[in-house]
Image 1 (cartoon, rainbow, N blue to C red):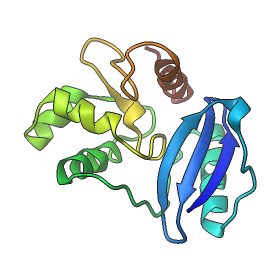
Image 2 (image 1 turned 45 degrees about the vertical axis):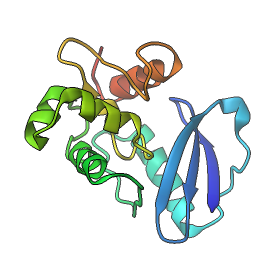
Image 3 (image 1 turned 30 degrees about the horizontal axis):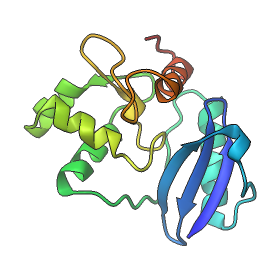
Length: 155
């Protein structure tokens, strides 16, 4: 497995890939950055696209992805990729489209191995921001707020 650590305006990221696809992105402390040189053309492209997301409006990622998950999780993650820059949908909206429950959608979002690229930050509760990465307050929720603010949304 190849890894790349990079700093963004939102947090540190650890990106994991093989030669064919991006496999996982983890939020890490900026002080924990280690492997900061792309070890493959794919990781270099991923780094460039994340940098473009950070400076451009309406940027859409175009990377080969391989996320391990159940069929239901895959369907939720596909739905997330349809939410465009600067827009949000509620857990309930996605659940209604998939014939599921908001809680099940939230659990699939929580298990999203590719945050930022598969934009689970664009999923909110009907009455507010909701949670992020399993947190309803704290560091992950601050990252979600920063991402949404970057896309022109306030919560």
